[in-house]
Length: 247
Image (cartoon, rainbow, N blue to C red; front, side):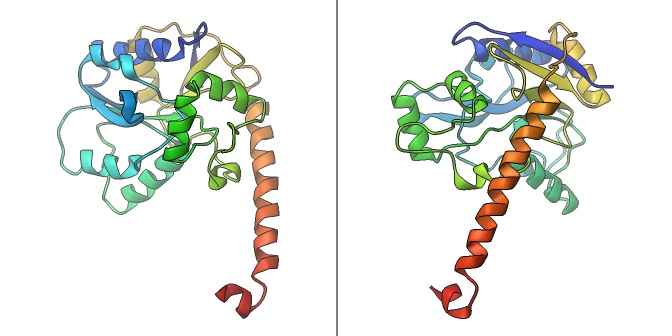
């Protein structure tokens, strides 16, 4: 049975609470390193590898951007056995790519603690820069996206994100749950025994579970499935002959 830990936060303190969790798993030996999206000042948010508990203050897992492929980095990090345990915080689409690379023996997960995060979409890199310039944060994005609005000004999340039927990650040890968590809270879900052991070592309190999560995930998936079916129908109508395919 899955275990949950609730992280409650005040305004602008989401990443502070998440930092405490990552700091805990490093300090208490659950992992030796953490690969996660981290703030890089004017360079935005990028996947970064840290081995010091004191460096986790820059974590920003829910930032709506993905400038590089996490699966490619996972392949590079696990190409040779290191004997060091690494927590990898990746989006659902990146994790699905990792699973395929495992089949091709291009990723080895023996020493990996896989952490998936709920994904409500991502902006293109240039749009994310505008998002930050306008004062946008992961918290404001999650709040708007939970209400069904991912647009900011004249831009929106990538079209593929709007029809993605996998907003919650599978094949993971832990999940960072934002969907259905309510305002001012995220949950950490331990899915596997490896995940439960890490959660217990993190120092966060285990207990509450997000009561509305399942329904919220199902509702989001249903909406995206409907949007996907509509988009595919439009595409088939536009490319129903050889001439249209060539244009």
